Image (cartoon, rainbow, N blue to C red; front, top):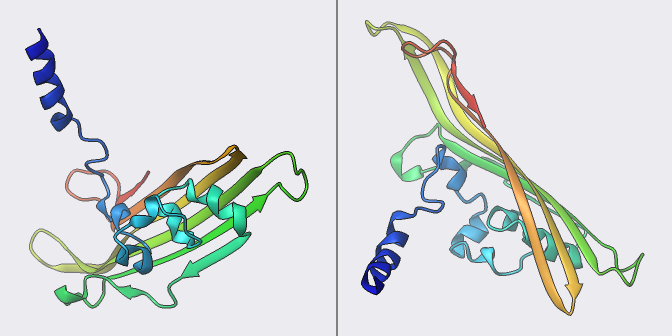
Length: 190
């Protein structure tokens, strides 16, 4: 019996795939070049960068301890996958965080509240729409985007404790027309 339990404990974790796949892979693209250069280390390290919420929404509770507002955005669209020579593909992103600490109003209530917003869009380029014979019917631009809303709360009672959650509104616009036997255009929302 002990051998069976040990075998189950050894082989069971390999079959569990926590966060192993996503339906829309672009949501895994890191929206911040600074945080990406640090290999996503900000899932655990405190940061004032508003994109830190992408890795860990509890960052907003930590952010609110010190800061009230921060924003970050790309002035122009970043060329996405430039080594593939797709000139019409791009990635752009912007983020904003607001924080408030109750220490000034109510000293006995050490509560820190942060809210954040990230808006990211990836342009997949222009596509030519054709019929079954190859006749060109039109041109459309496909894209995918998400908006992430986050809330983080920090509490100071003997230890500093943060928790948070995030919600993503995802839109995928891959084709303006129905494809095959589908009754609606190639756009989906989640």
